[in-house]
Length: 136
Image (tube, rainbow, N blue to C red; front, side, top):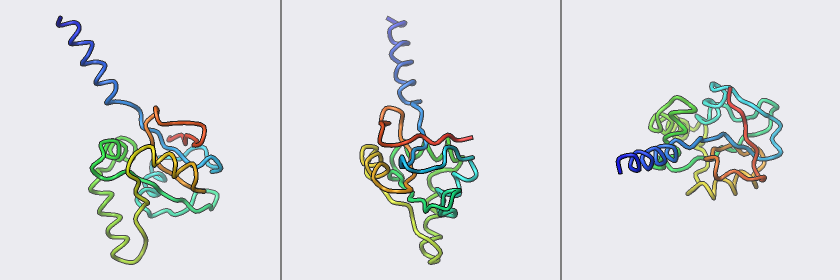
């Protein structure tokens, strides 16, 4: 019985550790981004892809666990720090906040249909309508 419980616990932890990948519109020419550039794009400080195309950033709500994991694991910042950066940009008139989506299904749809779009999805939500951007 203890072995069965251990197996269930392991399966649950694997689900919770599902990889979150950076994804973009299929026509985006960039294949990889480093962490600093990715962080600058999500902080809304960099508004273009390396080739000059405008970036349309999409994010999940702050309370979404996938958003929290993405910001901490991939960007190395806490969600509230990112929100603070967005608020500063908006209130100072120097920029805008990213586009919010309700869930990963909407995220995938918006990225697939918005030129220059960038966001993130768990592996299970990937399909042929979005491309994965490698982070190095």
